[in-house]
Image 1 (spheres, rainbow, N blue to C red):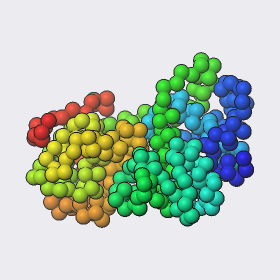
Image 2 (image 1 turned 45 degrees about the horizontal axis):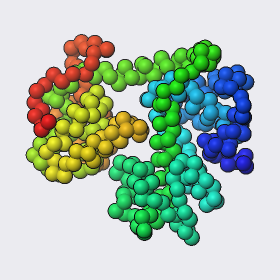
Image 3 (image 1 turned 120 degrees about the vertical axis):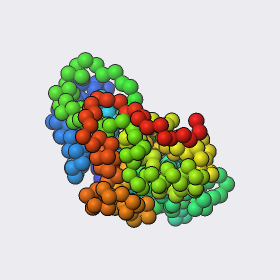
Image 4 (image 1 turned 90 degrees about the vertical axis):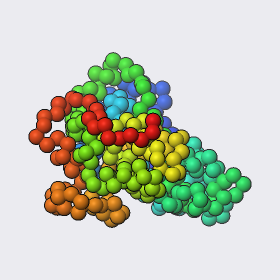
Amino acid sequence: MKEDIIEKYPFLRRGLIQYFGEGISLKEFLEENEYYIHKSADLLYSIINGEDAPFPINGEERVKSYIITKIILTYIRDYFTSARYAIRERNALYDNLEREQDPRTLKSIAHELNVDIEREEEKFLIPISSFLKNAVVFNDKELKLCNQELRNGYVVASKHVLSKIIREAFYRKYMQEVNEVVEFPAEVDSLLKPYVSEVISRGREIRQERANLGPLNEKSFPPCLAEIIDQMKKGANVSHAGRFFLVTFLHRIGLPNDEILKYFGEVPDFAEKITKYQIEHITGTGRGREYSVPSCQTLGSLGLCYKERDPLCSSGKISHPLSFYRIRNLGDRRVGKSSPVNRVDKSHDTKE
């Protein structure tokens, strides 16, 4: 396999075999590449802290770092850390796919990710089942099935659309693989632990920070979210952006998916199976990536900001709806950092 192909697409099986080798144990491989364990652990630590850490550009270092980072993520099994890294790889893959000129390479990559395609002149034929499985990016009009040309059970896709489908297929496959339960031999455990202990500790700290929002209390919801909930209770057809915001916010403050689902009980187009699937996709619990809560600036651009309804919002001191919730919900009350998120209000009465 050509060196530049391996550098751009380090997940391809032929390239992995070339660098990992055959007939070598995991322990032997890690011992021979201990330098890359250190580099990969540093990379992960930077990524989970939101730092702009670039991938290695040298061919061998790129592929070995990819392999060992995947081993580390499988070892620590931290969904947040895995998702942060996988999004980086997903975006790098998409950039390379958009620049890729060889249709044979595109077909090879798609096949590796279980997306069967056929080329038809400048277009690509994707089975509808494969398209739908990987076209679950929220609010991406280019991936809506209704916007595609259909023919005999296939989606007739441009290279641009195909790149997005391959990108999502990679992410789904990667997250599924690194979150599988794998028993590591004791000698591998002792080899990895010293390098990844800081990554594990930082991941725990971030999860704790994310959970420290106190008990669920609708009375502390920001006016933007309160308006959406009020409209849904009235049976209004709330926009996709509004529903997306609702799900991300409720998930972020610790509400389980089944509880989030109850908020949709009064919407006109409620379909439990579809809504449940969409919630799982947005929250990352369906082995997808976990979406962030939109900022106040984003909500304003979507016409979902009602800051004039509350003095805290209109003061200009709030830039994110979670900040509003944290201030209003916690106040001066002490909330134990390990406390579970429980409902403290009884105002919500949508259908069970």
